[in-house]
Image (cartoon, rainbow, N blue to C red; front, side):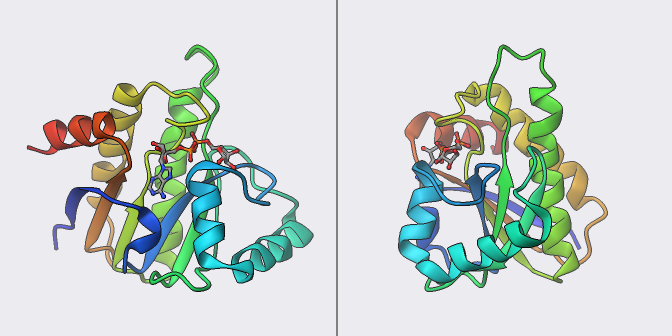
Length: 172
Ligand code: APR
C-alpha cells in the first residue's frame, strides 16, 4: 500500500502520531530548538530513556537514530536522530542527512509503526540550507517508502514559512 506523504505547519510536540522524530545532538541530553521543545513537553521520562541509551551505547552518532518513550506527548515514541552540522557541503553532509531519514524510518518499521512525523532536521541551529535539505528529506523518504510495510503516513512538520513553502511546492 502506498504510504501518504504530507506537509504540515505545526508544533511537532502536539501531533498525535505513532512517532515524532527529534533533531537531537550526539549527547542525547537535550538542547534548544525542536530538541528543547520535545523534552519540555514530553517531560523527564524522555531524558531518562536517553540516559539509559547513553549508558549502553554512549551517545548517538551523526546520521544514526535511537527510539524512546514519548513521555507526556500525544505521540507514542520519539525517534532521536542527529543531523549533520552544515560545513560547506563537502563533508558528507548530504549523505549523513539522508541517513537520518532512512535510519529513523527503519526504527519505525522495526516497531511496526504506521505514522511518523519529521521536523526539518539540521535546518535550524545546524544551518543546513533549507532547499537542499528538503529535497534530501523527500527523495530519501520516498525511496524508503517503496519497500516499507508498516508505515502508512509520513508528515513533514514545518515550523517556519520558508520550509513549509519548499515542501508544499515539492509535494504539489
Ligand atoms: N516543532 C517543529 N519544528 C520545530 C520546533 C517545533 N516545536 N521547534 C523548532 N523547530 C524547527 C526549526 O525551526 C528548524 O526548522 O526544527 C528545525 C530544526 O531546527 P533545530 O531544532 O535547531 O535542529 P537542528 O538544526 O537539527 O540542530 C540540532 O540544535 O536544539 C539543538 O540539541 C539540538 O544540538 C542540536 C541542534
